[in-house]
Length: 387
Image 1 (cartoon, rainbow, N blue to C red):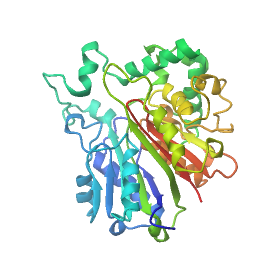
Image 2 (tube, rainbow, N blue to C red):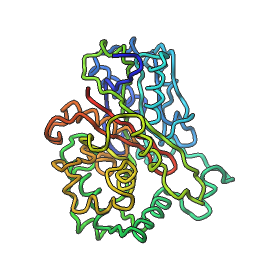
Image 3 (spheres, rainbow, N blue to C red):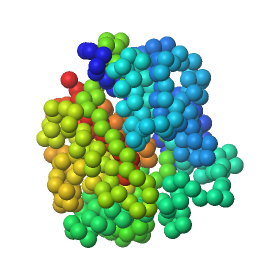
Image 4 (cartoon, one colour):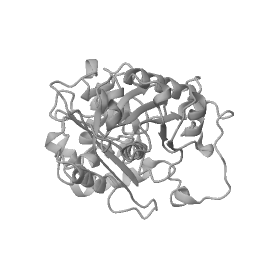
C-alpha cells in the first residue's frame, strides 16, 4: 500500500444520549480509546488531529472540544493538526483534510473527531452559555430578520420546490424517517429505539412545510472518532483498513437569496470524477439526514436516480430498507441514532464494510459505501472501499 492512499482504520464512539453529565472532553477521550483499541494503535503512534469546526466559544454545545485541548489531554505529539473550520466544506471535511495530510507525508495516523453536547448545554445554560450579541451579522443576517433561526426553514424551501415541481409527496418523504427508525431499533447505541408508523408520521405537527417533527434530527450528546492512516502505515494496525477511494466537497453561498441547487449536487457529481467506481458498485449509502429531505437530494446528486426522481426512488421504502438493493443509514441516521453531526455516517460505513453491524448488518459481502455530511450550503462526500 502506497503513501498516496489514505485509509480509515480505528473507529470509536462514546455513549450517545441527551443531557449527559459526563464532560464532553471525556466523551471524546472515550471515543478515542475505543478507536485506538480497535486499530491496535497506541497514543504514541498518533501524530495528527483533525476536527470540525474547532472549539466554538459562542456555541459550546455545538462544538465544545478543540484539537489543542485533546492534544493536551492525551499528550499527543502532533506533527500536523487542524483546529478550526478552515476550508472544511462540511463536517466530514475534517476527514478529507486528514486524508490529504497523510497522503502528503505530514502525518501517519490522524485522529478525526466530532463532539456534540447540544442537549446537555441546553439543560445547563449556566455552564454552557450562548453568546448574546446586540448586532446581527455573518450568516445570521440573512435569516434572523425573518425569525428563520433553524436550518429547517431554508431546507423546507428546497423541499417545497420538489413538491411543486417534481411531485414529491409527504408519504415519499416519510420513508426516510421510517427507514431510519427501523434501523435504529437494531442499533444498541441509537438515541431513539421506538417504532414509528406512517400514521404517526403523517399526523405529527409541522415544523416548516413540508417538514414535520419526524423529519428533523434532535440535539444529542456524543463523540465519534475516525482514525485516518497513511497507506504505508496500515501495517501497524490490527483492524481491516477501509480505503478512502474518493473524496469531494463544495461550498455554496449562505445568503437568503439561496443558490439554485444545494451544495450536495456539485459534490455528488464530482465524487465520481476521482474514481473508476460508479453508483452501481455501491453496496450501502450512509447519507446525511439532519432533515429527511437531504437524503433525497443526495440520492439525486450522487446519480442513484435522476434529478427530481428522489421521492419516487424511495417510494414504499423497499429499495432503501436493510434488505433492499440500496440499504440506507443502517445505524438509524441522525433521525434515529442521534445528531452525531456527520461523523456517524462514515463510522457506520466502516462498520458495514467490516461486517460488524450485528443485527443491522446488511447481507452479502459489502465492499463499497458512500457516506456524506451536510448538503445545503456545505457538502462533503466520501467513497469508501474494502480492498
